[in-house]
Image 1 (cartoon, helix red, strand yellow):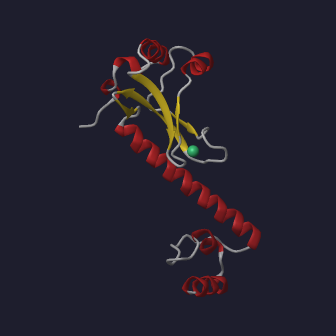
Image 2: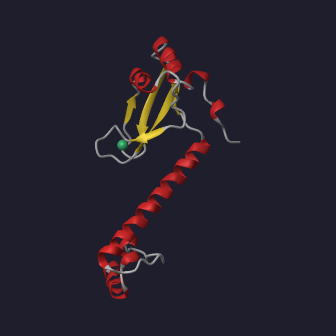
Image 3: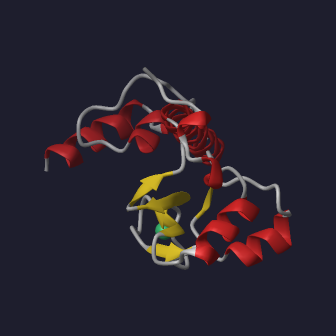
Length: 155
Ligand SMILES: [Zn+2]
């Protein structure tokens, strides 16, 4: 059974409520953010978020590009502490994020292949690359270049 937003404790729904609960019992309650790539954790500055986004902003099912490590291309998402830290997103949202990441990767690869084809004057072909061959290079290579890519992949 998928758990929706009502699965999260009442105090985690809005940043203003999070601040009240955390400030009252900072040893028991907290809010943290972490990154799926660099794995850094940081305590969330609720005052700064309230100042920027207002009291009725929710951290549930939100993610942002990594702000924890310069240059990191990971995603930052939120956790609430109630005993242990627990994720502040639903399973349905996690599924949407996986799909969004897949779609973004697919679009970037298609754009790379298109630009590569423009640069080489070759036609883009979408048949899958053999094992060990870069899919972008494969997509824009002509037949002679493809033979060379296969030889390189075999070593
Ligand atoms: Zn990161």
